[in-house]
Image (cartoon, rainbow, N blue to C red; front, side, top):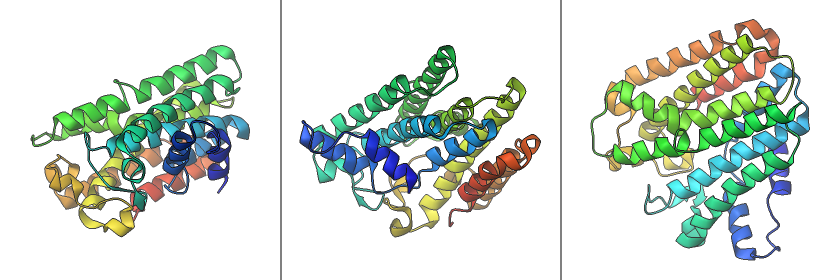
Length: 284
């Protein structure tokens, strides 16, 4: 897979000091995962005829931030999981201190990539793209969503509160992947960017709704991570709040809204539409 090759090139060699840290970074980032966020970046890049090298850089940066979040989420102080992408989690394979440093290093590498590589047609747009990625990763995005998630364990949330949490925890980085891919090229006006943004918001929430359904219905072997963890940890989910059937209906509604946002792009948005279908139809 092309994305695997690109990530291999961006990640430090395991022979470069500190070898154990670099080995652990490669262990966490390579050889697994659906690469949904990079795929979304590439698909959005087709809307703006973006050069491949630019999209490869932003797709890699988004994926590295996603992987860092998984490494940290699996730590005993967070979700305390021992399986990720079908293999032992980073802190189990190495140790907790190394896993913490792996997450820190992957996040730093992500921003190094988007700072060093030419990813936009102007320096001002490149700075805006870096700001967008930082916002998606930080306290007003993914990290903030995780903080809300941790604070919500054992509590009863309504649907609006749950949606607010997942707009940040899951949706922010998915939205960043789509917008960054579109920004890598030219020819997408502000109105079209609004449509792309709406697609990204809908598909980001749909991804989480489906994830909650899969946690209930899929096996550990299918998921590549421990099934049933949400219920075991008493976490609020779309299934626990809405019930299984209503959660399925919500996923369908979000999927349809995402597709509707793409109508004006015609065939250029085929890959984005296909990815929306994939996100919805991961086996329940």
